[in-house]
Image 1 (cartoon, rainbow, N blue to C red):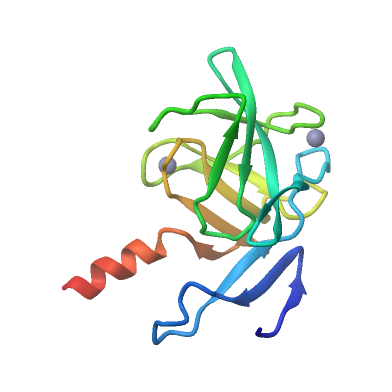
Image 2: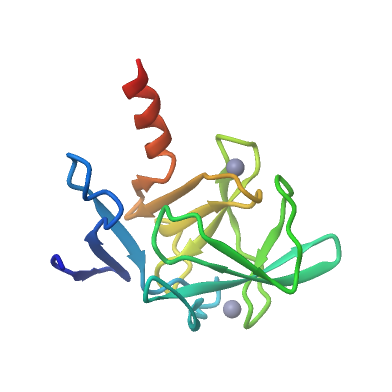
Length: 165
Ligand SMILES: [Zn+2]
Ligand SMILES: [Zn+2]
């Protein structure tokens, strides 16, 4: 197993899914993720490949439930609990502890939905967050650290397009 080190609430590990490819790549694993009031969403109630996952409350049209997300950045694993989510529908994301809504970071450049900020530190800092689209099945997510875009989960698709030309 490769080197692991903490980096502002993230674990950085070699990407186990890409070892067959030429490029040496890394994956980011979210180890802490906070609501606007500082509650940690990482829960040992769910585990993805041995890493504790994120649990977030979702709301739509008067219904609410919980979703569990993989803490591995870019891995689109989502498990819905107590709620049925339809492809393409928009949901609101709330803290499962205090019910505070997560703020909108920006508009989703892919689908026009809202990029919702999940904070990597307990102080609700937009320059240190993961932004995820609130449209079900939209693959867009951005990792923003120190105000700079560190990674964007759409990069795989972009790279795929480029290699076909
Ligand atoms: Zn909270
Ligand atoms: Zn989107």
